[in-house]
Length: 494
Image: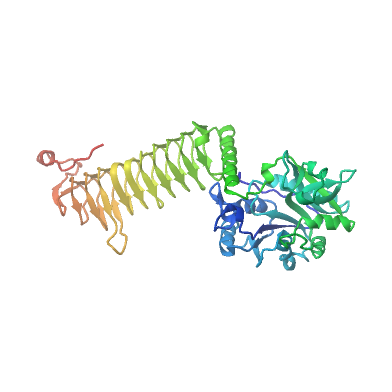
């Protein structure tokens, strides 16, 4: 679902409350996980509905929970915040009517208009619900105490039909098994989304009887009861079947994933100026932001709240999650970037891994099979080959040779490595943290650095010891340069 903006329907005579039904297990999903916890676009189904509901009202959202209540509540709080929802428990799942009835103590005296939603209808838009609420409030002045959302289907088999009278007004809902041959030709069905006036709703719910094989109390009986008691029932006929459909099976979940992905990519292409080489094989979260003139190759996954600047190129096989990417960044094939920040003009990969608040400053580069964990790589610094940088701070214009490892873990605790500006780390250097390498220093190939290295110093060996001091102008003397060349102390492939 696309990101919702705050939408407040025209004020009416009563405040708006929202009740989301999320107590069921969802047996047709064939899962141990409650249906509303299954993920669509990287977020639980219930989170999509909660976000839409929150765009309609500033009041807490009421959520009826049952199966796996703690997990459902956690998913709702993650979306709405600690105080954005109020939870009501349906201890025994006895139908949708019972699910609403358990909210009676919380809502019966509220004197509000109540919007009832299902937790498994993730594509519903705030604009659609706002129009439904507005119609209800308009018709409320004409005596309507209920407005129900309906849709027409080419094949309505299995759904309850909306029967209208000769004037086109609501008469009743008739279930498939109870419908006459003529009624089965009706294409208009009940979508399961309603607006009620709370006091009349709970009055009518007291009259609902479990007159079905399952012995359940159906909310669908309420409009008929209200009509029989002389109340008017308004119908809001919507035109988009998919938007108001629920998810009941994994097949439908996969189909909705496809629809959501297509909507997101289409929006980014038309409104955002983003190029997708192969949209059918690209995944982008609805919460992600991608800047103008970016080019995204096939098999790229951009997840969570990722923000990508302008003029970036992201090559195939890359996954980016909850990260911030600057302008003009080049991310090569098969990189994994999680919860990290990459500044303008950086290059990443191929096959690089950034995680746990890794940070690259402007113009930095990491190459193939480099892993960066909880580390900062300074401006224009490079680590191009086969390297692990964990819990490290690296200054500007520093070069990290192939095979370098910051040995950050002593078996009990993690320790930090600091490499200052304009340092050259030779290939296969082991930096045993905690350790600091001073500005303009050099480590020889294969060194094991266990002690701090002073600025302007060459160290080498196992363990590394000082071999040379550099002169004040940061160049080795002639003899020092010859020694470094002869001993191949600073092998650093580019």
